[in-house]
Amino acid sequence: MKQIALDIGLAAGPSLTNFLAGPNQAALQHITLWANNDRRSPVPTYLWGESGCGKTHLLRAVQAVLREHGAQVGWMDASVSEPGVFQDAWRVILLDDVHAYGAVQQQAAFNWFVNAMTPSDGQQRWVLAAGAVPPSDLQMREDLRTRLGWGHVFQLHVLNESERRAVLRQQADERGVFLSDEVMDFMLNRFSRDLGSLIQLLDQLDGYALQTQRAITIPLLKSMLENL
Image 1 (cartoon, helix red, strand yellow):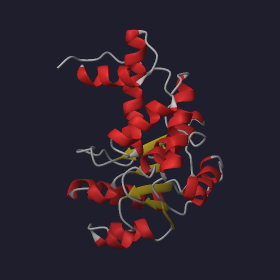
Image 2: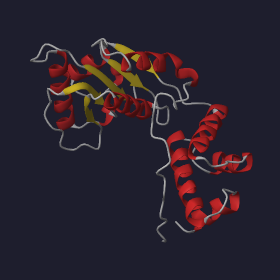
Image 3: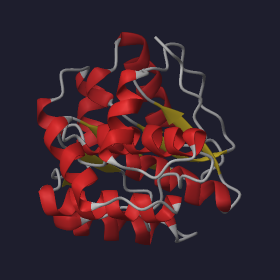
Image 4: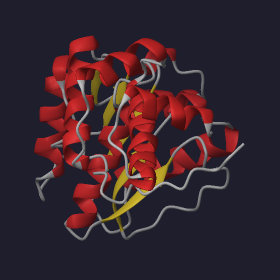
């Protein structure tokens, strides 16, 4: 299999401005108000919904905003097999994919949560967490499950086809590439409709078009797939 060299340096990362809210406007407004307020409330927030609804996008977007403000952030997702200890320098705790946490991650998340709410310096930290199911359905230690669910809880919904098209168009525009309706139809009809997978495909396609110095067309997409 041929390895394709990708150049996706121009691709915009997850941000609050490039998140197409659709039916998730209330969650976006809540998080935007919080992330841009230095005197933010310490009440935790939990986002839940199926894969592709934008949970990780929002957590990464919050991480980016806070780093721009010079704030340090604690991050944990299901891929972090050895979580570190809570750091007093953290202003925010971000916990992604909590439904997939094992025993070690649950213990660390509980420790982080308790330290965030009852810090030694007296300044509470905000906890933003996300999972695939509502807090009541999380299969985990009870003391962590109840803490994740006692604050603000928002269900995120997967975008419909017209909304997914709008996101793909926005992402293509941010990369400075033209994505025709025919190519978009091909992508939506032949590949996973999960938005994250579609954006990853667009990243690969953008990189392949740059490498081959060709416009993005269906033949180019087919050529890329043949070379994977």
